[in-house]
Image (cartoon, rainbow, N blue to C red):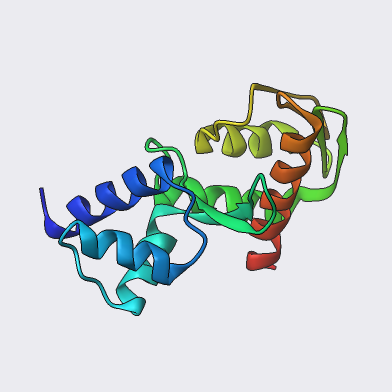
Length: 155
């Protein structure tokens, strides 16, 4: 295993095990594991892993890893699909409803599914509408913020 892939694995492990809200906290956790990294390296690692900042359960924010099976390519695909085809979004109870241009709901839905986000229970897409099911209204709203953050980052 290369140094970089080992570091990426450790970052994923730490983000799944602990609520990490800042780069400096993550750097300190890595240092305790014997991995000293610069701010720029850590930023690049988080970007490559597709890590996003999401609202934490008790307020504030935390870093959330993309699913271990999601790749940088999957993240780029999602960014492109959202940028080019998503036209609206709103929560509806434990559902998040996304609207796309006609004929593109399936491709946007597939890009979301590839991310493997744990709060998503299931998805279904029609011609221009996607229903994303979560377990709670809070998860649906947090997922909406995550998607909005991704979309605004690429806009």
